[in-house]
Every structure is written in structure tokens, then in C-alpha cells.
Length: 109
Image (tube, rainbow, N blue to C red):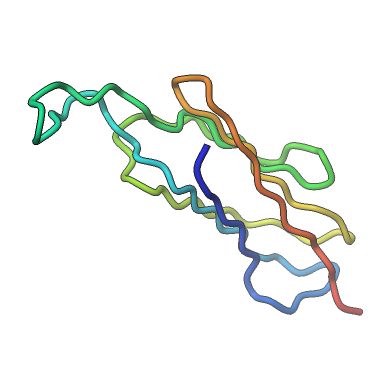
């Protein structure tokens, strides 16, 4: 699948802080209701339908998405920092394609 990005805000945090985890996927999010301007044919539906956030391989948020979400969708969740580790965002689309992106969590003392 296309490119993706995971960011944690603020950049500096410590154990006990709540941070914002942002995820952006570069994806067309085609609804299956639009025509190609050159050919006049319907562009097949291709959209992300599931996004799941993990911390140290434990799921903490799962979203079911519909085709009405915009191109290159952006998702944001809050997470409490409990220890160092890895945030992973796994996503898949209605055609069966999937991807994942990770970000290391390194709290300051």
C-alpha cells in the first residue's frame, strides 16, 4: 500500500503524560461512484476500511472506516505514556491490501 506517517505530539513527553498519536495514510479513498475523466469509466472502489493502533503489540484503538472519508485520510488518538515502546498503526483497504507504520516511544525522565 502507499506511504504512511505516524507522529507523536508533543515531541517531548514523560511516563504518565498523555500524547496525541497522528496517523496519515497516502491513499486514494475511491468511493466507486466517480468516473475517470479521460475514459468515462467508473473508478473502482478502493478505500481504507480498518485502522488499528497498537502499543507494544497490544491494541488500544480500532476504527472501522467507510468510503466517504477523504483522500489521504488523517486519524488522531490520545494515548497515555506508560513505558518506552513502539506505537504501530495497521491499516487495510477493501481490496485486501494492508500496511503498517511504527514509531518508537522514548519518554524522558
